[in-house]
Image (cartoon, rainbow, N blue to C red; front, side, top):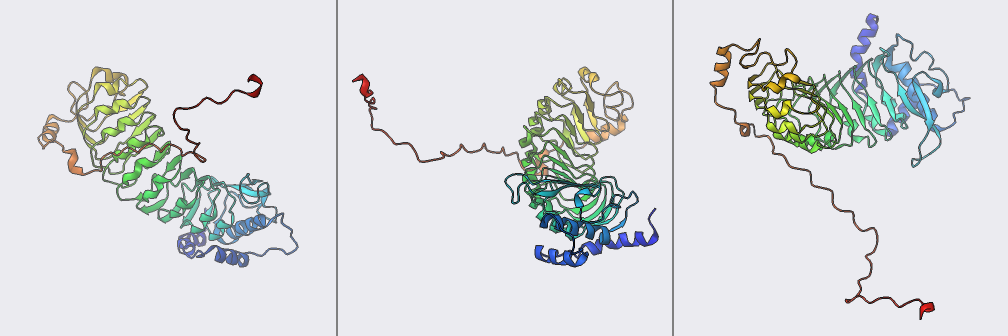
Length: 412
């Protein structure tokens, strides 16, 4: 249990973290003053000395509680022996290749309270930074832009605040981004979906504003954005994810448009969940194009009409949940994939636990849904890549007709 003083410090750390250094040079100078380095110590390289400064500054000034003792052995110059710190030779193709460096930092499930100091930017050789399930608060320091080799960033299940941390857009090697269960707010930068990420987890934050139209540019195989407040359209551009997307969860995001038929282009998707939104109109017949889908959940929306029989006949479908909508038809083939209570609270004849006739009549007495009225941006297929240019000078052009070369001398 944290002391009252530690709780107050944690509440104030948001302000402390906002005072990060404005430039890389400033960070380095501030870091030199932040901790004392024994002048008799000899570090194998400047990068390991920088790592010592970064980790000791974090431990001494920005960690308020470490109940499981993860940083207890963070003592002395041997940073490669610290708990949660992993060293490896730098890979080929980067400055200092082969030199020992701090390549990974994993403090998952440490229940550590504190904030992320700007000196973490001194860990410039990290390829993995895992800090999930702690109590880090405040802002994500912009100095993390120095982590140009970072492949995995997991800051989930903390108390981080502020706008979406745009610094992640400056990490060229990043493939795995996990920011879920924090308090980030505002819009998602459209540039995120132009980055070469393979996994994007942003669920359970306070993110708002509609999903950007370039949403479908992302090459990610997994996208989880549940429990935010986007509203607006389910972007038709997701059809451009046809060859890469495996799982997408957009649960409880306030989406209030029709389901675009382009979802049927997602031929690799196995999990598609848009439940707990305000989607309207029919479930498009084109959904039957999801030939690999196993879990399909559209529950708790305002969808209407009949469930297309071709959807229930999808070869790999194991679970189709359509409850809490206004569907009026469910083909018999759906019994194979719809759970026993997976179609409740609709307007289905001869099915238990449906809406009352009065509720269904009131819903269908309204004017039919006009999907065009939502003014969602139409689907624009991504053009195919241009053919590769010829790598060298063009070969000489011979005059027509082509002449046969003279025979070798020995055959004359």
